[in-house]
Length: 187
View 1 (cartoon, one colour):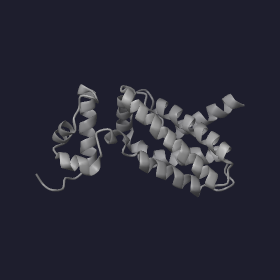
View 2: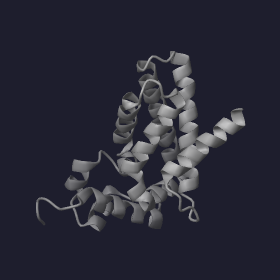
View 3: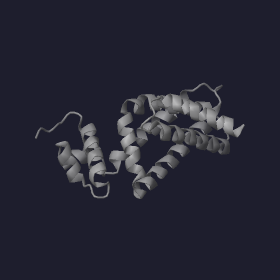
View 4: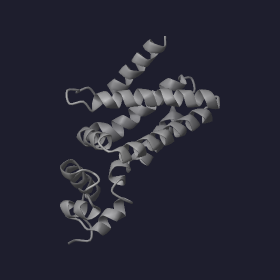
């Protein structure tokens, strides 16, 4: 087998998702994922710390993108709008072209309590990072945390809709719609 294989991460992710669908997350091993992808276990571990990271590996990159986008927003933009704009930019670059994979990931996580717990932990870390980015823009820490939480609610609502089979609108549009619904409800 060659030392370098093109599209290794994508192949490993696709193989993992297939196996998670077929036999469940708990019953799938790293060896099976690597074999299905036509790669070695060593290659797997070059890309992922464990099989959970196949599902959560982009979390750090997603978080960094959002924090960068919040920092880049004009100071005159209201904080919640800055958060949603950052979520839209990250969705455009990281999710929109990967809709099928994100939808599969969503279903796999929803089917496994251990993964749901990990997802909640990642969301909490993202909420904290957003709050810190808003605080760095001059927002009071408590207001920053409330705004970050509202932004995460907008994001979760939009993702829930976006991953439904009948939904065809881009995530960017669904984020705007969720923000509008939140504002309508609060008003």
